[in-house]
Length: 371
Image (tube, rainbow, N blue to C red; front, side, top):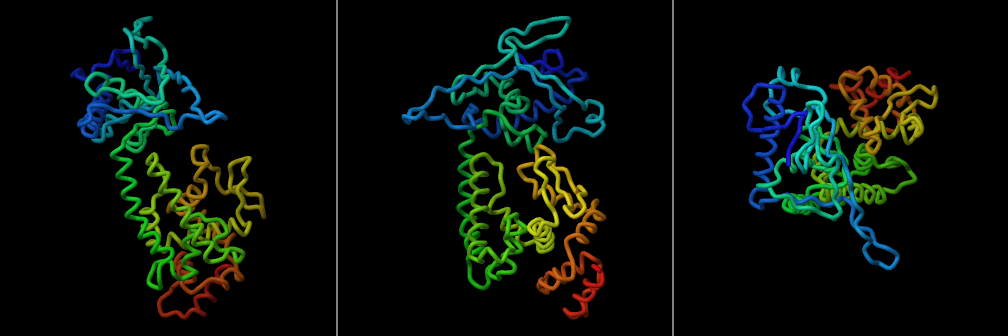
């Protein structure tokens, strides 16, 4: 069993200053992390991300065979403390292979034998002492295995048929969610001193979080509360299952940022009012009045297109685009329907003086600005 990098046998213990020096640093850092996390169990367990299907009679269907390449091409990954000069020098695409049998040699290069890895079970358990090279290849290189640490720390792409079955981590996420649940109930359904007791604030937060029609008169206050709670709860359950999703804690942290809430609510309000529209064919947000495109959503961000749009508009480097958007989304009639807190926020966005100004003066200043 061998790891192969760019046609050469990979030796993590080598001290040679060659093209594999940063790859060895990454390997050793990852192996150390795996041993710290799973060492007391002595193994890593992989499970399929999708459960076994049942047939019409309720019996489990046979587990389908998964065949995936023992060879992958991906961008170089670096240990946390790798110098930028080494990142620049050794960056680029790499070819990694894992050979179950003795590797083949052709034209001076080594290649995996066999060319694919076959798994016909719902899960597989790998021994830390005997199969570390395979563990490293699957968790940090192979696109067939979803491993959150490799994604968040080293830029591995998401997806894959399998994931690490980390029971302790899963139970920790569930426990955190139960602790946050009481806080979430209070925030959304609590008494007068709870964060979202005021209906205006509730609707603004819900809109900023991405709840469609949160500001619509056709949706009652209680319905908004229920929709918001269900949305946050669904994100928590997704996070508990695979570590990917917006949690209750992230929502409770989110409601502390008034400026972000107001801005995101304005963006979703523009979508609800038809000022901004998402073209599903072109994956593009456009202004229907002119047909001008605002933003193309990359394929990998389609599932979070609203968040991606907000991140784009509120990025400080896009201040001119954000200003142009406000010109499209705000007019005198819209200003008249907003509360005083919102008016003060927009005045700050427009760099209009707020101190020692009455509500009437601030509204007049905004109306003049948006003529």
